[in-house]
Length: 515
RNA sequence: GGCUCGUUGGUCAAAAGGUUAAGACACCGCCCUUUCACGGCGGUAAUGCGGGUUCAAUUCCCGCACGAGUCACCA
Image (cartoon, rainbow, N blue to C red):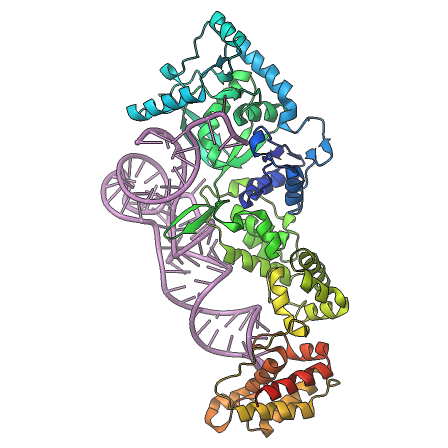
């Protein structure tokens, strides 16, 4: 299979662009085919400098590698140029051929003319568009045309449609299935007045010449599909197979709508980079939306690379999925939990360098220290899942850095100030950072019993009135004093990494603050 | 408004005429646990509505409702 993506260089890559891109890439590479990049720069007004670079970076960061097509330095491949503006002569050659065959004609209507016609059509409640009696330039004589061109009148080239809105055509879309669509009867513009083709004409010429076998695109193109099929026929070419996929939706109030570039920050690919969603996790999330079998596969193959999953376009959903960032987060958390501490370190480093420079300083000051922190609870069969995005890391480990440590010191309301102070005070006396995990915990247990807490949670539950609390409550006091919060990874490991001096200092501080 | 596509729990979805209508996320509960997590077990919760075909309909057909897309010299 030969597939492609053909974005416009607007400088903005939409999250939704990833769906056809991943589908195309998988289809091509799983079949041993070619996946290429074409730049649809036919609309000069929307073009942004450097956009090709943005596009390339965006897609390759998701592991979507192009075999051919536009690159930052030019073109790579034998079917170029891969930028449509550079293909002007090619389009014109084919356009001339159509004119010669009477399948296309110049149209001199101005924008104003068209607007008037549109208004009339609206008033008459008939279909919109340039067709039938509305196609004023359709039957101009050669002399008339020659004269208008000689006068320097601006014109566009229109397709002479032979279709009728009375007829239906049948078409099999690889995703949507059997479709019954009304034939196109509108004389669409092929070449704009600047001589640059519209999407429709460029699509037909390029995908034929570049040998695309499967076109994957959003289903907003479904309505112009009859035109495209008609054009392929008029050119005498075989049309590619089409896969029209539904847009990503987002709920708004009681209804849902297309994920919008203007309204939704998460529509931009840059949003995920900024929040620190690992691109592989985003890739996995999209795979779960694209191919329902993926989640099942991931559960039975937890250690495999997502690209080993046998993607099947036949399993693609016909209707549009609702974007669920909570699910994305879950996928991301699972993904991160499978990484090694070193991998996490590198990823966080890259993220922080760009988006949180002050944290970057602290984080990279002592690599071993940071990696040790990230190692807590990692590996093994049941790794912790503390965070799913890199932007959570600074607050996750802030208590390891005095510079950003900002404890809340809010203890359980059921414990009196005196009890808390007693815990803190006696712990300073018994803490020894040479203890191993068991000895360390035994000390806390002994201390708990000495202070009137239960050393055994079960016993406490049997008669809670006989104790102040249980050993868990004691641990929580220590955790709050040292970490400044109720949620932290394994305390023994945390204390070890912080070191005795720091632990004692924190506990003393906490004690002072109770006075 | 015309045309097109779609509609299974809150979300993603499986089930292609016969199932107690999977599973995952979220939520709730219990268990495990020195804490927080992780994990384990369980729970709440669905075929838009109305007709038809059939012994049998989530599945096929028709109508309605709702949603989405499109109707540019934008892609």
